[in-house]
Amino acid sequence: MKIIDLSQTLEPGMPQYPGHPAAQFTRMNSVEEHGFQMTDFHAVVHVGTHCDAPAHFIAGGQTMEAIPLDRFVGDAVIVDVTSNASMELEPSVLDGVDVRKGDIVLFRSNISKQWGNTRYLTDYPYFTETLAHELVAREIKAVGLDFMSPDPVEIDDISPVHHILLSHQIGIVENLVNLDEIQTARIFFSAAPLKIQGSDGAFARAFAIDFA
Image (cartoon, rainbow, N blue to C red):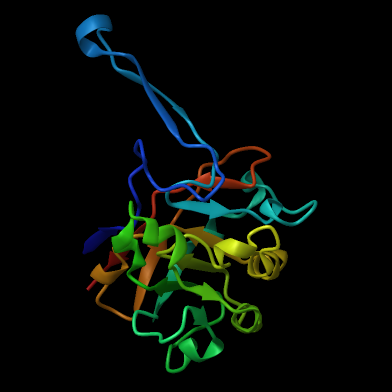
């Protein structure tokens, strides 16, 4: 059994969605001075590897504590878009992929290797609305991305793909890493989010398990 860590590290200076306040890490106590170490952490819930709840864009939508845990845990299939010629991801990226009802669909672009660079914030692939509707039609339960958003950054105030997926109770996991370490087409995946009451999102420690 192999466990593959798919989570970005929460750390000072990590990439933030444009316009979001920077995450703050403050060492309040140290072992040397106080006998114990304690860190104060302040951030919006949409930093690092995290899950989106419907309430992120849908009025009256589910908040994080109300979402069944299995929405972000279960069988996953990899969709490799590393050689996609366009930044726009159309339904054709699913051709030949064994997407099943109830799957978590992981999109591997390897743009995660640009984490910390400006390119990570501007040059990532994104879904067309047609692809989003196709995923709804296939009755998947979540998508996972090794990039920042299923929507292009310049239209985030509209975010049509977020609206389509979240209004159909499809979970979204953003900012994954190490999807290139997964060597099989299907794998067990978990991105269990923190159970935050009333929250529109939550940090997650995402990982995959290869039982081979």
